[in-house]
Image 1 (cartoon, rainbow, N blue to C red):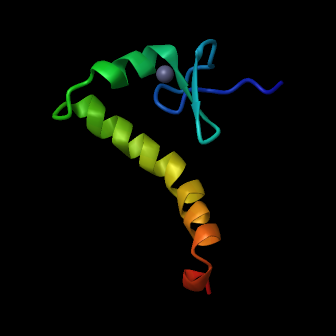
Image 2: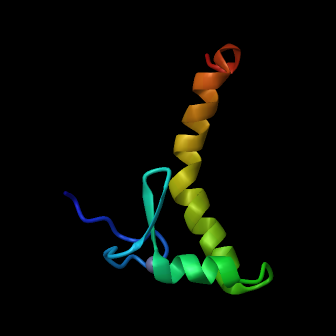
Length: 70
Ligand SMILES: [Zn+2]
């Protein structure tokens, strides 16, 4: 099985969650849960998520909205 790396801190994943096939380690998951929305980490996390998750999400939209797909 391929070892996944956390998309936030980039460390190899031992324990954590998988979101859309992307791994987030339990350490970062804790931070995300406890983080305040006006912190740098929250912005950083949002950018990571956007970078890694936007494409699969858009693809999902295209599959659902056939009329929009050219
Ligand atoms: Zn992490």
